[in-house]
Length: 278
Image (cartoon, rainbow, N blue to C red; front, side):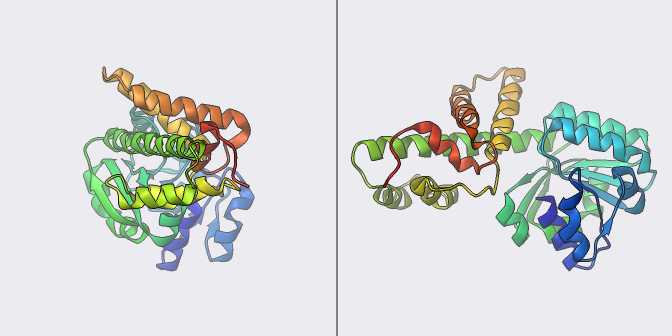
């Protein structure tokens, strides 16, 4: 995700400094003209605005802590990681202590939309920073919304990914039942596409679930399961019962335990059972 986002900024003429926990991951960006930073602090010190895209709350916090020494008054820090509101608040405090401005901007979208500049930024935090980085967000995405203070964007992203996870688990289960009853996967997907439940996610992930040959990762299953876990914690803290999300999470945990954590989240199909088509 971060690579695709930085690639679009480079193509638009931005000066980009890059750092990754896996050093070789930035090699393609350096080849496109990005400057390799030796640390998160060095990247933050070199930039007017730092964008962070990390896998989970711990990574987001660790990198923000490391970047904070490179921040200063007048600089901005935009965290596009999918985390919980508590982590967003902790990162915001680290940024504020350095005198910089903070905004969260988790995204709706995966690898393909990131490459096409079709992400949706769900933002929370400093409104002035939101306006300041609007041109860059418009290069990387198709929409941006300022939803409230820090934490609002994190909560919105968890709500969206709860729906994504439950829909994927439901499609996987429906396909398993249909196939076990003797229906062809292609016929099932055709029926879905013509019905009231048709949606872009079913159209994109359905054929992958039907083939069950491989699950090239656009959005890794382990990250979808992480988001469901965080969403369940949010529901509990909000006093809301979320049994459907809990059931979906159980499916994703099963698929992850079976070795599909690094596969696309459509690999939840493997947890639904049934024989593979031959």
